[in-house]
Each structure stands twice: as C-alpha cells, then as structure tokens.
Amino acid sequence: MPEGPSIFLMKEDLQKFEGKKVTEAGGDAKFEKDIFEGKILKEIRTFGKQTYLVFDDIVVRIHLLMFGSYEIDEQTKPDRQLRLSLIFKEGALYFYTCHVKLVDPEFLSEIDWEADVMSDEWNPKKTAKKLKLYPEMMVCDALMDQAIFSGVGNIIKNEVLFRIGVQPESLLGNMPAKKIKELIEEARNYSFDFLKWKRDFTLKQHWLAHTKKVCPKCGEKLIKKQTGKGKRRSFYCENDQKLY
Image (cartoon, rainbow, N blue to C red; front, top):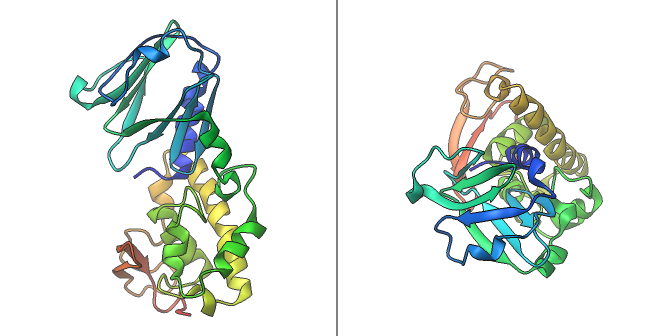
C-alpha cells in the first residue's frame, strides 16, 4: 500500500489538471460518470494515503489500497482494472484497481488535517496529546493509526523505530517523554526523507531495518515478526532497540 510520501508525489503529478475542465469520464466506479462532464477540477488535496479530487459540488476520494495505480495521458492497462478516467482537453487521468468514492464537499471540513505527517498543518503537540490517551497501545500500532500519524505505513514505521531505538511492541505508557518526542519528530522527518529518496529512485538503498536481515549497527540478526493488532511485519534489533 502506498504511504503518504508516494501519495504526495502523485498529487504533484496530477496538479497540472487543476483548473481544467472535464470533457469525458469513464471507468467502473459505482456512480454515474457523466456528472463530471463540463466540471472544473478546482483542487487536488491529500490526507495521508487518500487523495481528494475537488470540484464545485463533487469530491472524489481515491484510495489506492494495496495494488492501485494511476497513469497520466495514456491508458495502458485493461478496462477491467479501470475504476475512473477523467478526460481533459489537455490530457487525461486514469485510476486503476483502487477504491473510488464520491463524498460530500462538507466531508473535507471534518478531516483532521493536523494529523497528516506530510502537511504544513501537521501539529506535533496535538499528536502528543493523542498518544497520551492510549498508554496500553503498542508503539507499532500507534504509528500505523491514521488518526494519529496519517500517511505513515509499514516502511516508515520500521525505519522510525530503528532510528529512535525502540522495539515495536513497546507500550506508549512505558516510553519516556524523550522517546515520545523523538517518535513524533522522526515520523515527520523520515516521511520527508522517504519523499526525497523516492524522487531520486533510491528509497530501498536507504532502508536500515525494513526487510533487512542484519542490523547495520551491531551486525546481529534482525528479528522479523508480525506485531500489534494489525499483525504487520516488523523488523527490529533486540540489541539496539529497547523494549519499554
């Protein structure tokens, strides 16, 4: 599943269509497509792993899920995978194998934009308050909770916990205030490092823990384990990451 930085890059790719008029729409999403014809794409917004195409009276929410993708200007994948296509005079957008839904424009006002680690509105103090509400929560679950760290996925989770030296099954209530602060800071820092490396096509080269077998610090074998309520893969070092 694409993480926040990848969705941020998708937004950048799509922005050339802002202010442009839709001439035709298609795909097998479960709503009428002709409602888009003649409408102007006013804005493209992202929140964590979700993308919103904002028109005057329509908002389309797109979630790429595990295997979703998009293309610009040319459809190269079969119609059976096409969920939504928007054709403009200046080009076209194609979204495949993803979840596409219409939402009320007022829905955007209900989103906690301050929870998005990639957003200019990111609010670390508010995040700290949220974390205090869940002392029994594992830190791996906290990082993957989109209401707390919107945009963080499994790669960012593993790399952030390695950076701050904390094992994924540590409980928030047992972690020192210093480590909570580091957690919040590095969730954002690593997300922007991810973005930079993704642009440079070097992301995997910078992984220290995710999918790795040996700790780059001590040389010992990394633990690979499904952790937290979501049973997502964690990679960590028992020597260099502390269990709280």
